[in-house]
Image 1 (spheres, rainbow, N blue to C red):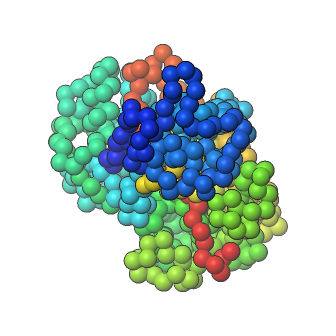
Image 2 (image 1 turned 135 degrees about the vertical axis):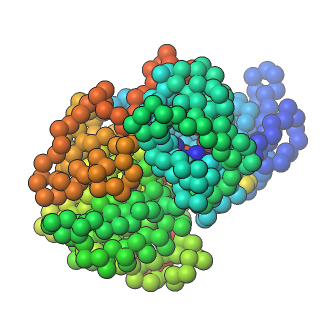
Image 3 (image 1 turned 180 degrees about the vertical axis):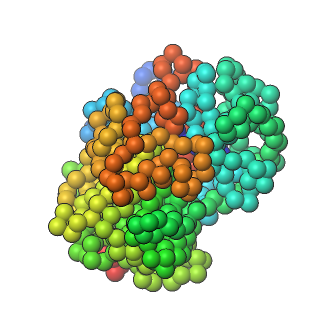
Length: 527
């Protein structure tokens, strides 16, 4: 798992024992009368319209809204166990029960993307990209003892980059607590996932390729993340190859992608490598824009990028917007997610008009990033476009939602799945390069090579293992020898059940938000 060293303060939800009062939003007015009865008026399997409870900010109405809204819009509504809203105290606790408990073919949870956020915090994150942390990101190669936690990359103009922290450094201690073997999980999690500004943390790093250690004190702060980094052109004997590190489908990324593809379009490139190994997703429409910028009008005209499918109550209508279901096209114009970006809505996007793209992937490549892979793979074979996957198995999330606010909380519940122009969309166990060794899951195999994350080189370095494999494969069609997870760094080792109590875990909402596919209404001319 890859984690961004960021966090936001989540407003506490106040729980009250009062039984009859109408409480403020986030409280709870439900109560058990003591004889097994409740004051909710609940009848199992009978649902009032969610609109009847929308915006009524006492806890019982909030829970009744969640119950009806989930029954109306949740993709697997018929797999929810219908519970009396008065039987569970907290609004968020009740929301957390409104999901399926089924598993995929591999045994993974069918729905592990169900969460909620304070609305103001969600809007702040989506609109600005502002996050709290030290300015570096890290990957848990092993979360339980003996743990292995390495820096994946640093953000520019942050305390971490100013202190010289670099990719590949291993975190061996924080505030004097041994990262590798200590059972003090609370102290480790507190240091790795800070929640307030101005907190000093002492890190001990082991440098790449040596036993040298370096002690660095970093102070938490709020930073704007760079979703697009390391845009460059690599000269080869067989033409120029473009490279772009794409970390997040958030609002600031649209302008940065626009500039990056204008730069690449002027560099006479013959191939493109998009590094999405740490991209958990975001705006689906941005993935559709990126698909167009890669493949161009000739390859995408008249095609569906993604068709959204809701539950069987809504075969032709979007239950969230009430509008007829309209597939996402490959989007060829600027949407202006950030109205202050300096580019007008409707501006034509640049495109490279390529016949193939190389995508660098890992288990952190998720949701909207997977939608890009699937959308491009849906281009008919007659048009001759190829997607080549270099790296690791993606996370497996063909699902998405419309973030929905009620009483200052935004709720995220899976409402749709997506299929490409060819009608394919079942990749709940992820995409994997075709030569993936000893795959434990049941992924969809894609042309390409299984290559572990190489922490001995910076991202964008042509000698970094994934990028080097892409550059080699484009001319030879031959993959480097595959290596099993046990034999090579870069593959995260999952903790066993017996290790969970001493495993590091990131429960921050922004990590959940990052690993998602977010749908927003498109401009009218695109519908």
